[in-house]
Amino acid sequence: MSWLTSVAIAFLTSIFSAVVGWFVAAGCVQWYRIPAREGESGYFMVAIALLSGFGGFVLGLVLSRFSGGGFLKGLGVSAGVILGLAGVSTLIARGLADVPPTLHGNELMLEVEVRLPKGAPQPVATTTPSRFLSLGTASGPAAAPRKSKQGELHVADAKLTEGRWVIPGDVELFTARGTHVLTIVMDDRHAIGFVLPLAAHPGDKDKEWSPWQPSSMGGKPWPDTKISYRYSVSELVPTTETTPTTADLLAALGADAPLANWLAYLDYNDTASAQTIMKTVEARQADLAKSLRSANWEESDHAMHAAQLLTSVDPAVVQALRDVAADAESKIRKFTALAPDNSDLAEVGNDARNLVKAWSLAWGAVCEKSGIDGRAPLQEIVRLASLRNSDGFMQEIIGDAQTQLCRLKAC
Image (tube, rainbow, N blue to C red):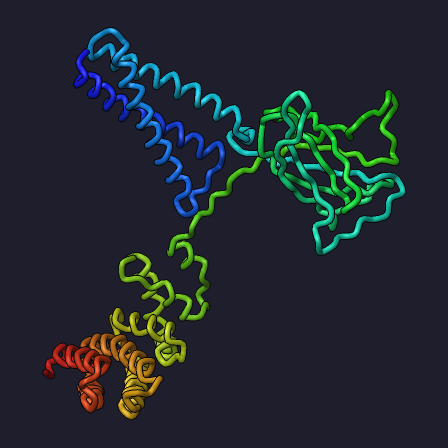
């Protein structure tokens, strides 16, 4: 086999090896719970893929030189070895990982009830977690502790049962690997551990409470002067939150709900909901007038959007919009009176610009539908803003007002 053929095999093997390595790394991300924070899991997968690709190139080059055949045989041998190595790596990685057991596809919590010795006083909850559970796993012939997860003892929920205090608790069942060891910590000086007789992969029967453990000591029943416990498992069933639609939210509003609550859901892009809202607005134009005058900018802005959609206009709405125009004129006067270096200049100018933009659209629509002459307030706003027409805020105000004057055939 020529060196050119060997290099071609090595290159293709490198690509194949990188892809296989990527999938093995994806499994490791899940099994070892490598977080996605700051791209950590992504960097890990890319690193494994690159290393696999480099290793595949070297392996493909070496195997092609000793396979004793042509291109296809060399490529097949290299791919087979890569798959074999990937399979072994996957089995080892999976076997060493702390993969939590599941039941019906759901991860599990270990529920525990700790029964205090007979005659023990009522446990008192403290602000510091001095009492807790710890679920550990031990591996190897010596059953050496390897990893543990801390849980909670809910001391405040302790109850007196048959003359003994029982404290509920829970801890995540984080692995199916090794022997489970439950440690009950009552304070800084008192802790007791038990080997938990729980299968690596619990079933439905384990959702029922076990008998009190341990059951005996030295061939005799476990004394009531010592702590005992019982356990069960519960499924961590994920909850699905259903986001209510605008129609659902509107249906929940009562007929006498404040109009501002209806206006908050007005959306031009949701035609059906907009029609429902505007039926209420049309019937409550006196309330719309109040919202137009509201000191709450969000409520007033929503009201001015609604005013644009009215099919008939109540005189109360017209007067409210005249009042809003007077407020806009006041804001413009305040702006033009400020010195250029005043720290409030931008805030005042922005407020005036936003108010005129929303008001002018509503005023133009209302004037068209009601047939009134609405030129005077628009002309006054143009005159006031022109006193400082070099400013960007005032230029926008002049533009918005003049647009509506043209709409009313007055430009």
